[in-house]
Length: 205
Ligand code: HEC
Image (cartoon, rainbow, N blue to C red; front, top):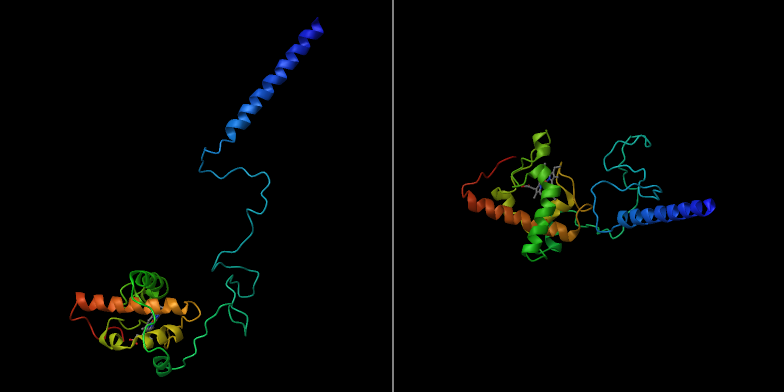
């Protein structure tokens, strides 16, 4: 008798516990519940790994820089080598900008210009970028008459090879992107000419 009662208590107790666990598992696994806190990870697999951020100091290398220079005598895969040495060679090779000045091309040019050029040339091309405000030699205003008179190929050549203290961008921007930037520089120049008809001609130099 006593034994039977104990058996029943244990039996229903276990059923109760199983039932509770079942509901906890069912509810806590609800895929529709969202949470901003990161999940508890018992086994982390390879989700979190030691890594170094771009431009971070890293004591492993002698120069303590995490940015590594490319190996000598190597060329990036899919690299487009820019061959013209002089403006004249560029003029001969590229009679005109191969890209149409569509909205998309201009948007791409704007994006690349504001990423790669604006730090020095400023968002309007006036030569007042952040780097210049901190002491880098000021480039001339891209909207001045002299620069406006450059053929497209000359601007393309300057972007690709650099000019004096300005570094070349052939290894950082694809050929297509550089032509898109040329279109955007033209667009900036047109806008500047429209807004101030008497814009400064020799600013910067
Ligand atoms: C590190 C700063 C810096 C960056 C970044 C830079 N430039 Fe320059 N750029 C200069 C300086 C300085 C000059 C003037 C060089 C000289 O003395 O001839 C110059 C000159 C030029 C000229 C010739 C202007 C003229 O009237 O002779 C053009 C065009 C030009 N840059 C376009 C660009 C474009 C487009 C980009 C982005 C792809 C760019 N630059 C990125 C600093 C920079």
